[in-house]
Image (cartoon, rainbow, N blue to C red):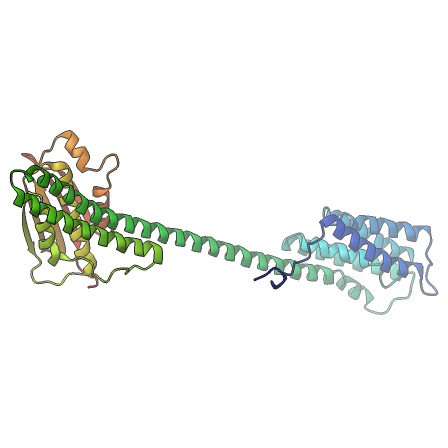
Length: 399
């Protein structure tokens, strides 16, 4: 779209500063009040020096009504009372004090407005009674004079209440937007952690197995070529699996799809394949899986599978073990997952297993167990070796 074809954005006019606003209001009030003060009806006092002095004081006070609304109300009210007591009657002579009363209500609080209304009504009624002694007044005029100061105060209260309501709406919208941003960041962080955990569990396991298998192939290349070929075939198979998992993760990151791959999430039935792949590294692995014929929630089975996978990866990378026992069984509505090996349990090995430094394996296992509402313990066993045990609740989950 070219610059000429773009629709022009309407710019809202910038509001005047309080000083300019006061100057504009004072100018309008001076014009209207001055015209009324200059002409008075027959039988009433005509404009003289005192009339114009009170006029000048009222207009000058309005120039600072935004800064000192109470003081301006007192000054303009006194000038208006002075006109009435001096015998100068006019329809717009009370305009300055009405503007001051409006400003006082808009910029104050309800309690101050109520106090001002009582004082202004009483003062207006008293001035009307005193002024009526010299000039014939209709019956009930003091009561009417007590009501007119309430009009600008009521109008100011309405305007202030509307502004407060609009401000409250704006604050609510701002808080809602902040909550949405926090929730969006939380979801992004959760998804990032989930992808990082999946990437670590799958790729780290596969690459660790490939490293061990490649080492076996190198050791047996000259003396036992068949063993070397078998190990390299396993390396190739594991490499393809790692590439497939990486493509799945990249698809999630690039396209925002949680199901970037058509393959279902691994479940407990695939533990045999997982164990068989680990056995290709030369490690003896025994597997006991018994769910009692019970169909478990998919998320529980996925968490159990990944915990076993990561525990076996740690054994391959850190344990220097010869045998690993894997047990998965249901007991009392909880799935017990236990992986025990006979590897080294020195202080250095324990630090490596616990993921100190750059490791995240044990952290990921604990996160999976905690997410499912379970718990996970890991540590050395008496007599040597290491054990990882997780308890995952299976009741109330979806399949």
